[in-house]
Image 1 (cartoon, rainbow over the protein chains, first blue to last red):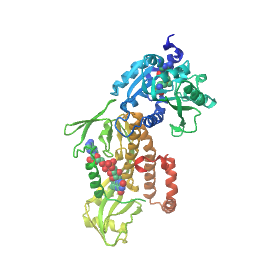
Image 2 (tube, rainbow over the protein chains, first blue to last red):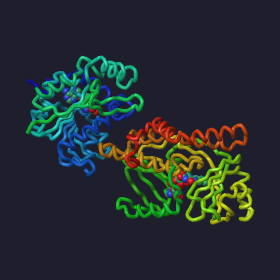
Image 3 (cartoon, helix red, strand yellow):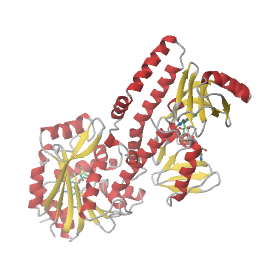
Image 4 (cartoon, chains in turn cyan, red):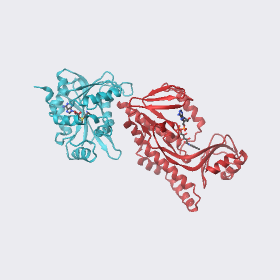
Length: 248
Length: 298
Ligand SMILES: Cc1cc2nc3c(=O)[nH]c(=O)nc-3n(C[C@H](O)[C@H](O)[C@H](O)COP(=O)(O)OP(=O)(O)OC[C@H]3O[C@@H](n4cnc5c(N)ncnc54)[C@H](O)[C@@H]3O)c2cc1C
Ligand SMILES: C[S@@+](CC[C@H](N)C(=O)[O-])C[C@H]1O[C@@H](n2cnc3c(N)ncnc32)[C@H](O)[C@@H]1O
């Protein structure tokens, strides 16, 4: 068995290969992720600070924490984590993302370990992390349960996984596919395949089956008037995020 | 409505706060001569030949900000065709800590209370008349001022130097560039009729601090344009509204048409009666509900 081939969907990864150069253009193809970034960073930093008892007002609050950003793309989340003092490894299954991410980190004066690969490979090699960031990836993989199980193996006992994705219902279809891909031209067509989307309850079940304990979930809600994103306790109808713990 | 504080009392207090803060290195009496903002850092060179480097350059150079011009930021606005004459006066009767604003056909006259029986006068005239009035000696200057003033404060005399400032509106088309932000009059010089110049600058500072603090806590790059644009979005609406309001006020009150004058009295009455409503309306319109106030203003 070749573990590296179990969860990668080659057609999905090829889509990201084709757009690699645009990762850091805030008005380019990844504009939705740039716009979502403040909101999801609020969630990620609060979860980490809470779980590992860190004070965000202190200098380098995440010093000593080892973070894996799986499906890191251009490193939109790796860089903030490194800036907060964490030791960051960014891994992506699309080879072209790696030099793009490396070049940008160099420009930002940040030291980040970017690697071409998969969660399965890292787990096979016995890598262990305090935190796994798993953001907007699970809807692109071939076998979500196997993929999440690999992520679980990468966490040390007491470790935290933050996982976000898109819900599956008529509204998310309208918003994410018709809205973002066609109407607002935020995303190139074909970035998202609706049938792969996962409901919050399905994700909670998958995470539990993978051996983690889901502890929190929130919605990311887009406000067309302020043209920005907000966290919501109740509205998980389109984009949402979860936190889960590996029991000690 | 607020407090009137003379800037000569404000300055030493602010200076003392700066001196006390270990995080601030203060270099008085030097000028920024050139600057460079790159993806990595912002860099300035002073007329004393020193170089300083940081993550973000903030220009608070007033409405003629040379750094903003060098950064390629254009300004929009116009000359109001008026100059403000400014002086301090001493008067016989107490001012009861009340600010007065008279709307004269030539432009507004503001009487702002200072300590003891003294007030600061801001008085608008056409450029031509203002120039003529500035040529007069003190006695003649006062004789022009007295009739406008009425006699409710008793006799008046000058209590300091006389100044003249041309009035104009000057708003920067952009408040930010990568690693660069404008605050205060460098971003927006408005008509002094509403006495909102300082407040508008303080709001800029509060909004910018809020945006930078949040970005810093998230691990974002505080000099990145998408971070700085949040500050710009936040302030631009408020500033444009203020510019329009002061502009409208000035046009309305500087007109000698009798009909307009009647309308003015009516309009002002309504505005005065509804300050709360108006404020909350404007706040909402600006997306500044109480919970959306910057941290420093909560
Ligand atoms: C007649 C008149 C009456 C007014 N009345 C009121 C009032 O009653 N209430 C009110 O709130 N506002 C009033 N204002 C407006 C108020 O004065 C301004 O809004 C306020 O001063 C703006 O502050 P600032 O710090 O942004 O700019 P400024 O006060 O213009 O300060 C800019 C500073 O930057 C320095 N500088 C410029 N270039 C450089 C450089 N290259 N290197 C280093 N330093 C540099 C300058 O020397 C100056 O010290 C009035 C204005 C006028 C003209
Ligand atoms: C929508 S992007 C999200 C990027 C990044 N996590 C973010 O949120 O900014 C999805 C990324 O996951 C990568 N990817 C897809 N399948 C993967 C897999 N099985 N293992 C690792 N990365 C994968 C893609 O190449 C792409 O860079």
